[in-house]
Every structure is written in structure tokens, then in C-alpha cells.
Amino acid sequence: MIEVNDYIRTKNGVIGKVIKVLSNRVFLDNLGYAVLIKDILKHSKQLIDLIENKDILKVRIDKTIMFFGIDESTSDTKYKEIIKSIENGECELLEILTHQQFEANCYKVGGKQWD
Image (cartoon, rainbow, N blue to C red; front, side, top):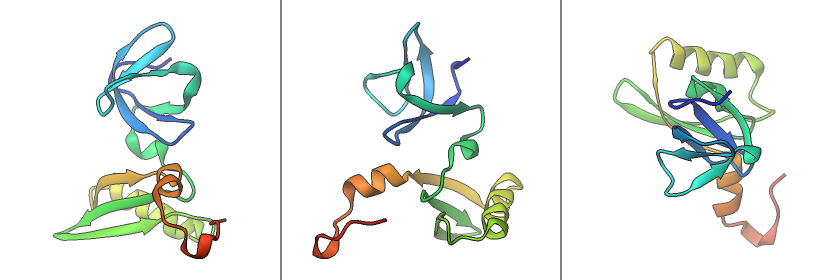
């Protein structure tokens, strides 16, 4: 059951924190409109649980900002290291760029599609 303060990820890659729940929709802190519950892919109390394959993470390690792309070529060990570092507070998760957002907004050089 989705509750206020849960994080949600929609089918089209929008991530947000729930500020209000109605019978068939939720309102998010980063949107000016409601999201239908049927369009929610997953939800969690922890933002880190919403990370998917091909997402891009912006993290701060000490005073350095770094970006990590999570995809099939990222070894399972490396992925777990990044997530563990975030959970342990060794680095701070600043932003998640979902693969749907990236694909919708990127310029495809030469008209080629990304796999």
C-alpha cells in the first residue's frame, strides 16, 4: 500500500515522493499534477530501492560530484559497491536520472537508436 512519504517510480520513469494519496492517484512533491496508481511501477520507503538498470546516479563523494551509469556491463559487484556506499553514508545520492528520462531527452547522433 502506497503511503505519504513513500517514493514512487512511474512506468515512464518519473520518480517522486508522495505528498498525498487518494483512492486512484497520488500527488508527488516534484510534480504539479497527480499520478494514477495504475501508472506506478514500484514504490518504497527508500529512494535507493527505485534504481533500475540503465539509470544514471549523481553522487557526492567527499567534495567531488560523480556520475555512475548502471547497466548490464556494470558488474554485480560494482553495482553493490555503489549501493552499499550510499547506504553506509560514504557517498551521498544526489539525483537519479532514469533511463526513460535519458532516452526521452538525449540527442541520438546520426539518428541511431540506443540499445
